Image (tube, rainbow, N blue to C red; front, side, top):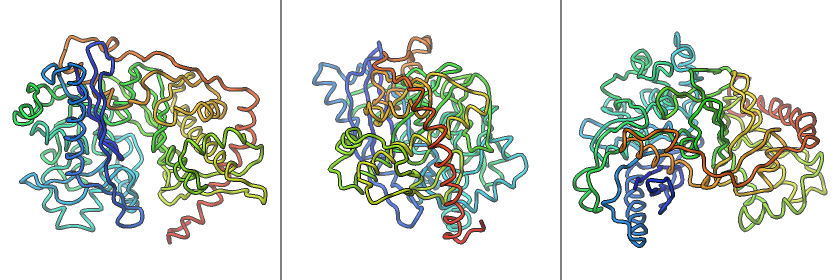
Length: 496
């Protein structure tokens, strides 16, 4: 048995799989989030730890009800939300709330980093407020007393690792999202660390995702009835999610429809296209990399629109949207509720409904939101294509994949078959468990442990509808953003 723990933004999830890879138990515990100022997003690391303990204890109880003993668990893997800045002092005390991936306060620091020599060549990425390094520059400028006391900088899942094992370690896929990693060489860049006033001593050790980074603390093992099992390095949430659905070979790709929207394509070599805000990261498995386009808001746009339209829940909104259908020349929606990454790298971008008429209904707004997210995803996929990594079949995972209506619309917008697979909703926790399996059994073969789940459905694009989206809707969608971008920056007092 292998335990995977995923520290998400909204919850900590735990999953238990057996030797064959079948999911035997799952549990989750919700997390609060704080937005103390506009564009700020923070969480308390102790909340992560409390939620982790609760999730693991619930999972162990569910497993024991099936006759599975905690002592049968042979390894633990970790996954988590990327980019978060968790800072500890020399006594390992948390100095302040963690600054999260969707925090937008550090845009000025990003502009500073873009002026550093060889920055893009080393990191393979644009400087974006979501990444970790600009957050530390912001702390150095705005909270210097905190910055002076920093002894260790950890990514969210790696704070859990320290609580579980007492070890400071991370994996290459998560580390690539800090802007301190030399992505091609898969190691920390002392040049980037020096520029931020940090050093190798401040950072956790970097490992491949299937490596052992430590062993479960003896006291925790006794409390949970487990052995002192190895804890794998694991992966950032997207890399672990990819491992969970078998995206481990060059030319495979997936689309994750969660709070954010992510297109993830696996490469057998280092590639980069920072000018289009494509993320170039290491994969969680040795000798592999991936390109990724990221929308900050995907399924979260559905929650927003359901609330705006007075629906009881998203399911009710989706049913109404499907019954009404997507009207030609209906309203357009920009899904940039908290800025955007790929392809715009625009922290000031905002959401918008445009083209409303006297006969517009809430079902029209719902369809516009579904379409707008799809058009935003298409922008990101085409940016990855331009980096030289085009994939013709795409696996879909995440909560949004449960909607047949929306996934068919997305296939029509993107113009490629979308593959739905069994267990896709389990996500990154499953990938973390698979990485635990590889760490606990060094002789295990990646292709056997990390196979693709069974195909449940295939959404094939309709050629006529795809032509409509590409020729009519995508140009209008892009023009609307361009016209409003200057307005949003003017509102922020930025030069246009």
